[in-house]
Amino acid sequence: MAITTGELAPDFELAASNGQTVKLSDYKGKKVVLFFYPKDMTPGCTTEACDFRDQYKGFEEVNTVILGISPDPVDRHTKFIEKHGLPFLLLADETHEAAEKYEVWKLKKNFGKEYMGIERSTFLINEEGKVIREWRKVKVKGHVEEVLSSIKEAL
Image (cartoon, rainbow, N blue to C red):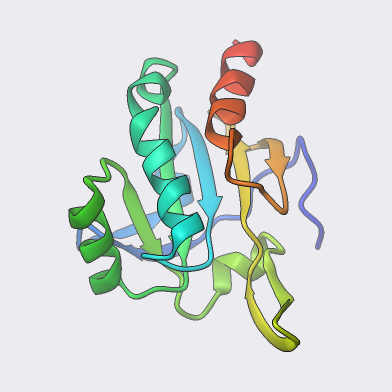
């Protein structure tokens, strides 16, 4: 089932870096930026997470929650958060259930080797739980600013 702008975002239930279990539906009434990224502690993912951290106040000002999702386990997420001072939750999608629902679990190629992994993607979900914007095959540079500006334009 393809993700379609204007339709309800697929719900999920994942272990979070705060030790709790989080469901997307827990955030009804707030906008949510859901960003899928390949792996904690890697250069591109660290840059993206730190960019969200650096713009965090701006997202709070427009009633928007940031949730990062990768296949890494919770303990690795905790280390990533502590190392970089990330103020938002990271969710562990070890079985890639959420990634598959959002169609970001893809065949990737690196140095001639094929493997399954996360295609860096971001989804903006409104207060009613509907996908209002999506970014796929994200390039990190300038991405977070584009997401924040997209939210502000929609206000």
